[in-house]
Length: 389
Image (tube, rainbow, N blue to C red; front, top):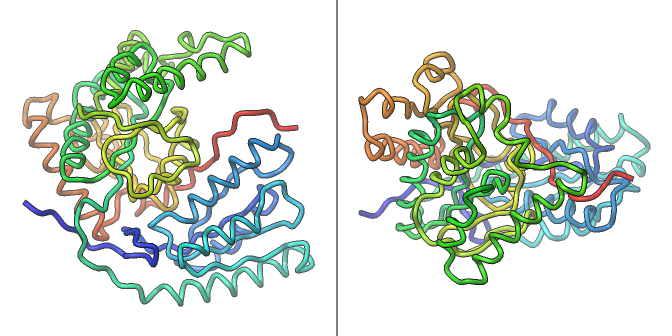
């Protein structure tokens, strides 16, 4: 069976499921101006991060690359870059790289314009023009093989590994088999189960890379005198019945399905035209991993939870799959798919998986997720490695 959805075909061939104008501050100092523009102009969303200055050069490059990938996201129809004028990120390159996609791009400079009020006025005018320019974009019918899905779990309990992660794993396998791409991360939640992921790698080199990113994460923690395995599971996980990091990891990696792992993506890296199942080197915390996954070029995310995690992302819809029937009943206005029916015996993993897949097709064609309707989508930050200086 051929599956299709209605998406926005961009000039560079990417396909989006949303048609946002992204307002991108190149540095945290420009965030308030960008926020004022977004509040004023309907159809815009903002990437309000806290980086871009007083960082070591590798992190400034990392921030620049991540912002470029976010601006190139298929769900972004046009972009407005808000520059302070003396930031450490390369805002000129940011503009140039997004322009290469063929999207409309504008840039304002707060210092050159004479300050905040003038910049807000100029930015509001520019954003309004961009929204009007792309508002006439129309959806076209495209194949499901044009999709990249990102996946994550958060606010996990025992039902996550037994139900909601299983549903996402079912969908991940189905999408990979249909020629699409699936990306997962949360390296901190590989601990104790990394050898199982390495065994699924398409080459020994990819397997070694999987083990390497886990070791890098632990080494970083040890450099501060900490044992990461003592910080996991989190207090919420423990309250939800998870006894150890190994138990948490075994439940978490279920959401990746069963297909071979093609490779490991760097944090700022976009997936491009690559297909199949991929890992991205990310932490587990929502603001940083959601940003990294949106930078991948994923049109949407499937998010597994047991205790209830309501947050989303500005340009990437987040479909919440809840494994705990009690949580779903309490937070029904935040959760999209009730996988708790697997726990109660009402539905099988396959039945809820097919329901979730149908919801994905609707999402891709324009139906909003619950966090989108609530506007709960400001969880953004960029994962950097060095100190603030």
